[in-house]
Image 1 (cartoon, helix red, strand yellow):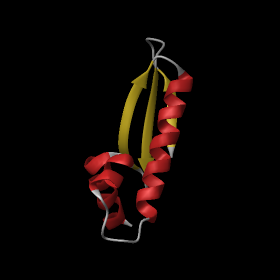
Image 2 (cartoon, one colour):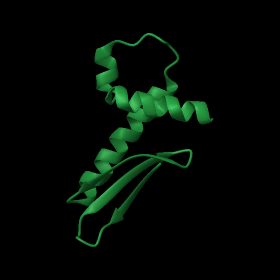
Image 3 (tube, helix red, strand yellow):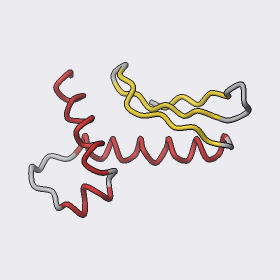
Length: 80
């Protein structure tokens, strides 16, 4: 789930969380940019969580957000 909020400096902060755990946040100059980033990251997270195979190419890992995002999702899966 993503949450977009307006900051006091007129920027927008996008925060991604799953199962009440904050995964990543980033600040943007526009709300559209924040929403776009959040939607893309959520899509990648959902794709990672749906993968059943244990063999992934390094190229596919990078395409889906990199090793850090996989590590975060593996942490989340353990908490389910």
